[in-house]
Amino acid sequence: MPEQPKLAFIGGGTMAEALIKGLLNKGLFEPSAVLVSDPLQARLDFLHETYGIQTTMSNLLAVEADTVIFAVKPPQLPDVLREVGPHWRPTSMGLSIVAGFRLDQFAPFFPQGTPPLVRAMPNTPCVVGEGITAIAPNSDVDASQLDLARAIFRAVGEVLELPEHYFDAVTGLSGSGPAYVTLIIEALIEAGVQQGLPRRISRELVCQTVKGATMLVQQSGKHPAELKDQVTTPAGTTAAGLQVLEESAIRATLCRAVSAATERSKALGKG
Ligand SMILES: NC(=O)c1ccc[n+]([C@@H]2O[C@H](COP(=O)([O-])OP(=O)(O)OC[C@H]3O[C@@H](n4cnc5c(N)ncnc54)[C@H](OP(=O)(O)O)[C@@H]3O)[C@@H](O)[C@H]2O)c1
Image 1 (spheres, protein in one colour):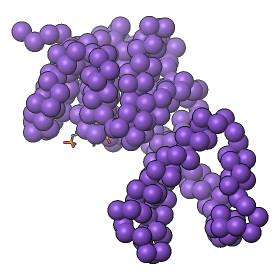
Image 2: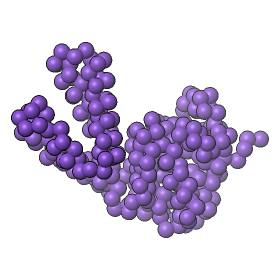
Image 3: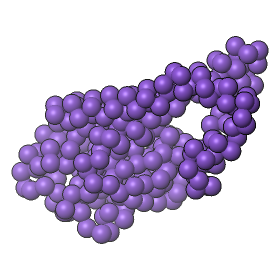
Image 4: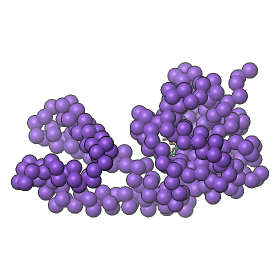
């Protein structure tokens, strides 16, 4: 007889796997207490063999867990909720990482009343334990459930509890942000190659520079502009490079990118 799962995932894709890996590494759950449901048997076999967790193709088995994480793509969520909503145990907490789906949009799917729910917006660096996740609970979540939600996402990075009305901006900034930063990394690697550096060397220089600059901002507590000024000698090399970036309106471009992504998130939320 398999153990009653404490934590279940509906959807066993990329984000679910990142969370499973982090949670097991941190020892927050035993593998035997975690269940994943997904329609693809090959995916379930991989997750079972890699992490030793329980697997099923039945979402109804998943909702027997105390905490259920919705980790399907946004268009798949309404069908999942129609299926599991009528079978929900009222005390179980639902945790949704589905982009653009608001807490108030869950209510119609739960005929016995809205359960405790936490909305979360993680990002892809969760896969390497360096994510940042915004969380927002509904009013039915108690203190110990909120602690558990925080602990689950802390297993894969940092956690911020924020009012839900910030979530579109969070989606546009940290949700989509890893793609902006990797685009900049890609461009800088290419720039190094154009200046004659071997690609492998250019990649190493760029990755450590981005990581180091990030840590400098985080650990010094200084304003980024102050750190920039400290390395900008009058008429020096950095000043020459910065002038080109400013002429190219890099600040305004980044603002427009975040604004476009935020507007897109708002539009998706309106269905
Ligand atoms: N990746 C990110 O950076 C990121 C960041 C923040 C939030 N999110 C959110 O996280 C969620 C998951 O993203 P992801 O990147 O992990 O997606 P994903 O890799 O596509 O994972 C979704 C999984 O759910 C499965 N699935 C589909 N229909 C199902 C059903 N009815 N019942 C159970 N499982 C079902 C899919 O199987 P099939 O492949 O067979 O359809 C797939 O394995 C999304 O809602 C996304 O908005 C992602």
